[in-house]
Amino acid sequence: MYKLYIKQKVFKLRDVYPVRDAEGKPVYQVDQDFKLLGNTVHVTQLASQRGFVIDRELFRFMPHYQVRFDDGTSMTIVQRFTFFRKEIEIQSKQFHLTLQGDYLWDLNFTVYNGEVQVGQINKAWLAWGDSYEITVLDSRFEEALLALLIALDDILDQERRRD
Image (cartoon, rainbow, N blue to C red):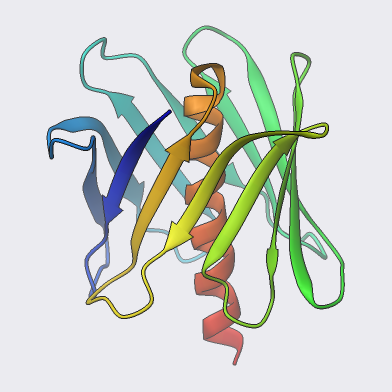
């Protein structure tokens, strides 16, 4: 088990920020393109320069994201319609993850691979800018958890704009 930390800026047209480990060292670089429609995020692992790209698909009833990795694999992140809790699924040929959290506070989320917990995402309650902590319980899902967090943050931002 280990943790990754994300701290975003408050005012952002183009969002660029590091993902840090428990020692505060940058592990990933996140670079979000400014678009009037859609959302494209480039994520680079600093040690290997490998990465992935997340694209939000437009004109969907519920948020839908495509994630493409440098090695040619891909996955889909889809928010499901539920009452009183958030549920987001990640589907790929290799695994099927589910994020579950409550709708009331949108602070604590648990990620499962079937019945097995593989990670947790926690949002800081009182913070200047969005601050998150990812607990990685299974390192095979590190990049999927990071992609899921970025999609979740976009979903929460979209919901705040509608309110």
